[in-house]
Length: 512
Image (cartoon, rainbow, N blue to C red):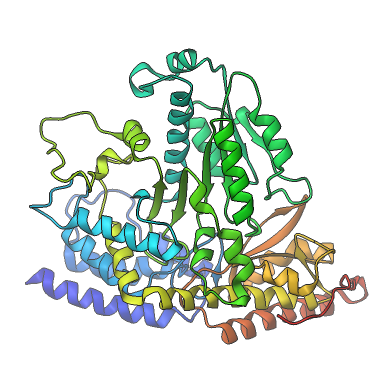
């Protein structure tokens, strides 16, 4: 009875806190953070505080010190999705029953059936056919590691080195006549570098094959030159949604050409689509034609990675990995026979421990299943469209403002062309260098929104990533544009004549 009463009180207090905080400041204040830190115990108590006292501590002391990054429609740091109501309900069920999804046991639990169905629904949403194999991971960083591991296995096997897992990398390279690996990339996520480190490929083997003017796009002539290298095994990794700008390195025609080159030179083709894959799920209207085309053709890849805890809006930690080569995946990740592991009773549903890194993990698939069943294709089309429209509203404001600059700068494009390329990331800076140095701090100190920063062409830039299901286009546009206007106005007042106002580059003012 104690647990039931405490649990109900806890859930009620938690729901009340969620409702009160979702429209408030995105981050806790410094004062609140310091107060919360002071409540943490200095050491393990000899006698525990008990369930009720701990529940009260969690709600009254811990909760106020945590950020509302997933609750707020205006947390635009990193790429942080929210958690849809259906996904939240399912995640509660996952925690309550504490399923360990490792072995396919169809006579004991529905867990692996749920995982297979969730993967099928996800493939349907993004336009992949059901022949693709897949599994859930903790995130696209682990999925990228899996992809590069599969690529390493595949390119060596193509050159005659079989059973890499048994003979080891050194002997496999000798058998394949390979004395060098290379990972050919466009602008890539740091997890690709980490994968190269962990898998013995090495950071020095990573080579950029992007165009100098648009580094997220492939320079096909340079790529083919690199693929021709003697005694070299190649893995090609392309970003479907570049991490700083959201720009796409892929499109339908380009993917056909890329597939042809990889086949010709026996290279593995990987698409890092952590967030870009969901452009395929945007409404099939003229407003999103450019983005849908940019994401087209990912099915020509050998492997695809993505995140559920970004635009799908399911809880952390949830990523996914797809591959067209289930035999390669199994060769890399199959767990050796162990007496207490049951064998698979249905070859159509592989045991997760044989197609991924983890032997033990939670039922990440259930929130994915629940949210896709609850909202369907139309629900996700609406959600994704709202995110794009918010990003485009801010991008349009930046383009029209004499005080800001949309990045990357492409003077050859009209305003209409620039905006149709905006997905859900907006990268910009203030034209006044002194304001630009303080811009990110001023935005986040306003408490109206939280953005993250970065560098673009050796100068600070502000990066806005719209990825929460709660966004409302008109509300967010009003709040964000006023916030930026107020920052500039206050800066001009405080700096007077020191403020060097610069006019924006001329652009064709066409409508989208």
